[in-house]
Amino acid sequence: MSDPTTRLGSPIQGVTLYSFTRAFHGREYDLEGLIRKVAADGYGPGLEIIGFSSFRGFPAIDDRFAGWFRDLIDELGLVTTSLAINADIGIHRDRLLNQDELIEYMRRQIEAAAKLGFPIARVQISITPDSMAALAPIAERYGVTLALEVHADQYASHPRILALRDRYEEVGSPFLGFTADWGATTVGFAPSLIEAYRRRGATDELLGQVVDLWNEFYEAGPPADQADHGQRFGRFIGLAAQNGRPDLGIDFAINGTGLFGPARVDDWLEIMPWIKHVHGKFFGIDENREEPSVPVRDLIALLVQSGYDGAISSEYEGWHWNYWQSPFEIIRDEQAVQRSAAQNAGSRMVTDAEEARLQLAQWLPSTEGASA
Image 1 (cartoon, helix red, strand yellow):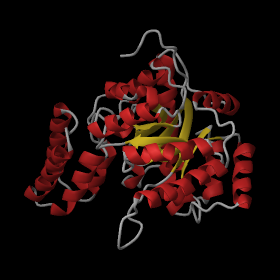
Image 2: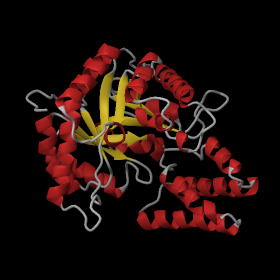
Image 3: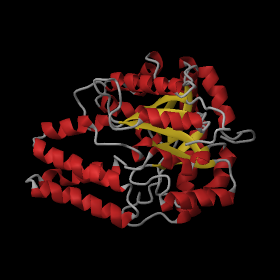
Image 4: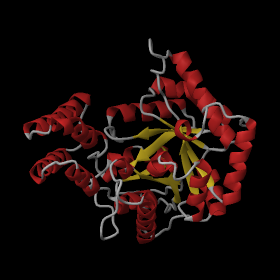
């Protein structure tokens, strides 16, 4: 599964504030309060944030706010890991952004990442190889690594991802890479999602058929192309309609094909040398204190055995439907699984802020000479 000559990695424990979206939207916490809770409850030291959802006026960040944010991170002993930025070419109602406009739109967000102290910017899959190549010198100028997210229904060996990898090799910039999202490599529907559908009135017979259909796709492997993906999407819609619940069809299809990816764990080896950051996507913890739909232990073992020293942002996606359990307790339990898995793989998760800061600086390309 890995090169026996590779030293073992020690991933950095972290979390993305996206995991706590329900608490944020419910105004249980403001931005500062949520960051303080991350520090107080030990979900760090790594901290990932989505720019547009957390910073008012993003990507316009003034010096006063940037200073306040950096001081807060230092005060709390956290380490900024990744800032999620957007590649929305449809921000105008009447037309799409052209290449020059897209590059400038992305440049402003990369500049904001640098100003806020984030060494990585998570880029969305809609960015093409040509755009990533054009962004490379901008990333180098600001000292921010661009890590394009590999997210279901894509996967590491998908032709689109391999085309990006090949372009990275041609460009030769250490500031281009990937964010590996574990949602591409799941092993089943989340039990909490099945429970949410049940609370919406779906019968056990229908839910059993939904699970059986997903399992059929899992056995077949990830979709070969967009046509294959579309066919699977349509089958979930048809299944709902056949059972008298057409209202659930799109929901089944989006989750069944776009959130629970059926690629195997070893698939990540296709791009492992370019993985700069990891989204530890997961959906819940069961009564055994394990994640039943994401092979967290196997994924951690793969990273450790591959020498991965970057950060893992625990990314709890179950908040979309699970309103009856605390996301904070779920994150706590999932991170315990990560730490246990790293220990079982012969290594450990880094939880000390200073060690994490130094390790991340060594893991990522040098930012000397970069301008914020």
